[in-house]
Image 1: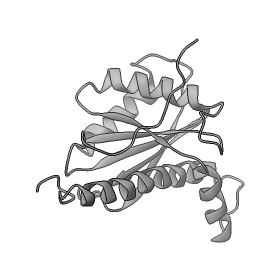
Image 2: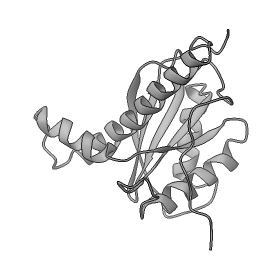
Image 3: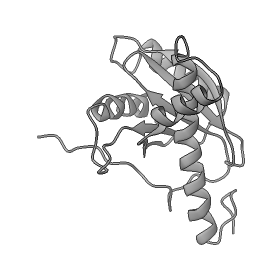
Image 4: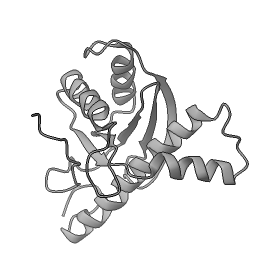
Length: 172
């Protein structure tokens, strides 16, 4: 039996200052978010359509690679769906397979898995509370979920970096 994927944590192998890209992988769409170069704030980028092709050359992988290159990202964070008990959810295989293909397409950029419990639900609720109708809002929800994944990673990274005595740029 294949080992179940586990989320990564920001830590010693932090690449330092630079933009991060997060992706919320769904079966139909991929929400994409980016951070500022100092890794403080996550913002939405776009929603990429999923393709049936499952190779490192698939159109969805190629689009994410172009975004990573365009933003000169130092790290990519892929949301890993988990259950409330912290175990990989049913969609975890989809996300970990996508991350594996992304790693092959981006050998020079670390691709991490991050716990994404509640991100899509939280994003949908926040948009609904701000008056955005759920109908037709799926692409926006996917981007908002990617923002939530990335902001969680950035916040955790900031506390780890501060505890280690480095500034957010990775220097002492």
